[in-house]
Amino acid sequence: MTCGFFNTPEAISWPSVADVSSEKDVERFVSETVERFGPIDVLFSNAGNFGTVAPIESFPAEVFDEVLAVHVRGAFLTAKYAVPKMNDRGAIVITSSVAATRGDPGVHAYTTAKHAQVGLMRCLAKELAPRRIRVNTIHPGPIDNAFQHNVEAGPTQAIGRDGGEFFDEQIPLGRHARVDEIARSVLYLASDDASFVTGAMLMVDGGMSV
Image (tube, rainbow, N blue to C red; front, side, top):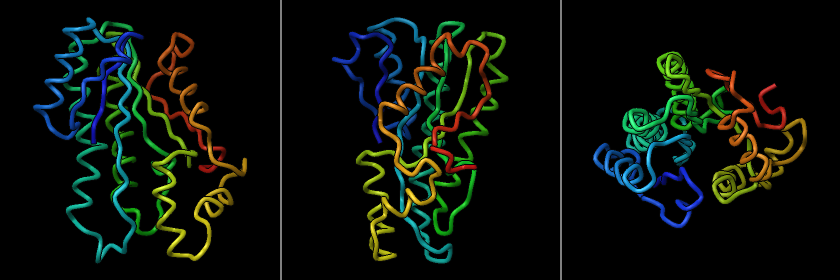
C-alpha cells in the first residue's frame, strides 16, 4: 500500500510514494519530503487495505499479516520517522474505523488492525504531549468510495443482496458518508480548532457505533 506526504499546497503536485510496511521506504519518503518542503506540521496516516472475510479456521495467515503490516506497522513506521521531523504543536491523525469499536464474524484482520491503531494513537498522544503534538484517530463508517464498494462486493455475493443497502440498514442516519464529510473531520483534528483535543477517537460513522 502506498502513501504520500503533503505538508504544503505545492506538495499536491509532488507526491513521494512508498510502501508504508517497508521501513526503508518510509524512511526514504519522509526524508525526501522534508528535504523538499521543510518540517512537517500535520501527519495524516491514511494508508489501508481490507483483506478478506473468512471463518477463523480458514482465514489466511498471510492475509492477516498483510493487513496488519499496512494499518499497524505502517502507522507505526510513519510516526517513527515523521515525528522527529515534525514541528512542535503539530498534529497526527490516524485513520481507523468504526470497526475499532465492534467485532464482526470473519473480519479478523481488519478489525484487529483498527483496534491496534487506537492503542498506538494513545501511546503517541501521551508521549508527544510535552511537544504539544496532538494525536487522534478518526473512525469512519462506510464511505461512498471505491474502497468501500470493493468491501461490499463480498457481502453482496454472500447474502445475495446489495451490500451497500445491507450496511445502510446498520447506520442510524441511513446512508454512507460522503468523502468530503470525512475530509472535513480530518481537517478539524489537524487544525487549531482542535487545539485541546488529543488521545481522542472521533466517530464519523452516522451513528453506526451507537
